[in-house]
Length: 321
Image (cartoon, rainbow, N blue to C red; front, side, top):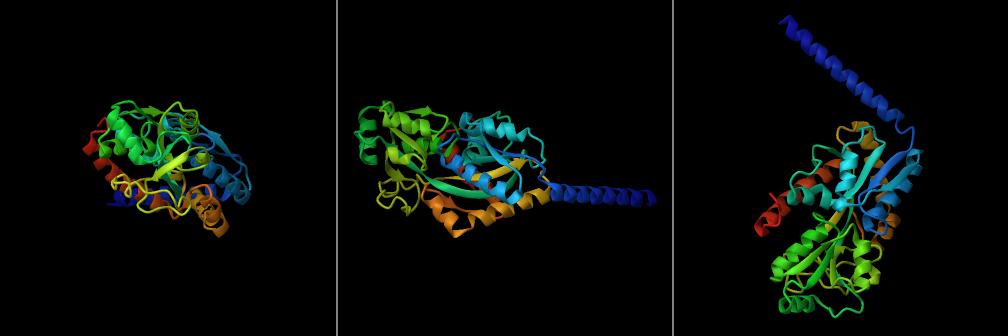
């Protein structure tokens, strides 16, 4: 009995020491430059949000926060990089639902676990996904696209931001719902898709609305209701495809087991910033809806989307599992 008591006391003593150590780390953090790894290239909404938040964190924390772009593999490259980094608060990740939820459902053997390898920090915001075409394109509506695809099976080319991204899933779901065959082409981000659409190299794109979208024409949004910043653009439901509903949310993560004190500082700073009316309005101008909330909201969003999209992927036989 006495040995059991001594063991319990020892365990409690160790836990108390660890708690005090974590508290001390949080008090002294940060003391040097923080790197925020952006999973998608410049001129994407995710990158824009990352750079805006990095500027605010720099001011609020008193140490530089730099953005390092590691695009590639639909966000996988950045995820793997941060998953392997020390959990000391000096390496963070700005990524989206694609690498955080969808890619693991679509592909086996990824070099990271989206739950076990990361600490949720904050759900920052989301952008509607859109179907876009070139300004000089033959396609002026979703009906035009479907009509062409049915008359020319397999010839329609659709660009998306990478395997496992929401744009990829939207493209797959759209084809399934419309009963069409298309050639889906993977890119490293939306800017390259927009460039190729504008240049007439591919027919249409499925991507998150954001910076640079004015170079092409938006034919439909994948939200349940029309969005304020695209009032004249119909939803997919309005053009007979009500099941094609999706948004691309972005969030900040850290490597697993980040001390709670640092998590709290980061979450509080980000929420205070994006909660300002002028900041929310500014994000709206680039097609971004601010969300925010505690880390648990991000964890809950991941669980909700995992349940939803795993069923869609399985029913459509889209994944490799």
